[in-house]
Amino acid sequence: MPGGRKPKYDPDVTPKLAEEYARNGFGDGQIANQLGIATGTIYEWCNKYPEFSSALKRGREPANIELKQAMLKAAQGYYVDEEETVAILDVKTKEPKSFRKTTRKKYIAPSPTMQIFLAKNRMPEEFKDVNKHEVDLKGEIKTATLADLMIEDYEKGTDTDTGSGDQELLQEESDES
Image (cartoon, rainbow, N blue to C red; front, side, top):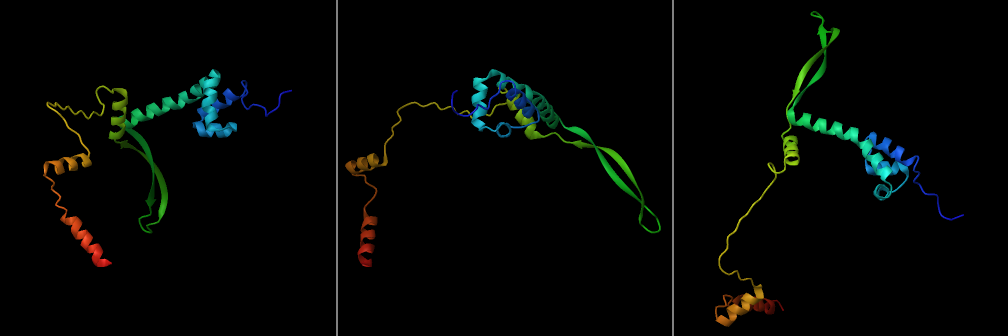
């Protein structure tokens, strides 16, 4: 009989559990926690066991459809029924004598952020962020380090640093000693 612990993956049970957890909206970390495994094991099992990967996809599909519908609704704007309780006051005592529930339609304005997100993802060729910079160069581009430039200036006799700053610094240091 081989040693070691019993594997946690049971082909008859594990995919069914994973599908149910995914259907309930659990993320990979939560599913792993429920199965008593590390999150990385979820990814290993998806690669190793096609039935496990399929079960997760099946479980996530209803929630993904609902999410897409909610995103589209948020991008377009929509109405909701808002219930409100109104107190009917006694004219003399100003005390509430009864309550009445009313329903009214409230408009939820479209979300520009969701509109942008959907446009960029559904029609990327038309709505992508592009920072295009065109540069037409003619001639030669020379690059050099600061040390190279200083040596070149010194050899040409065009050294702009007279060294007076160094002399002042040395004088200050000697004054302090």
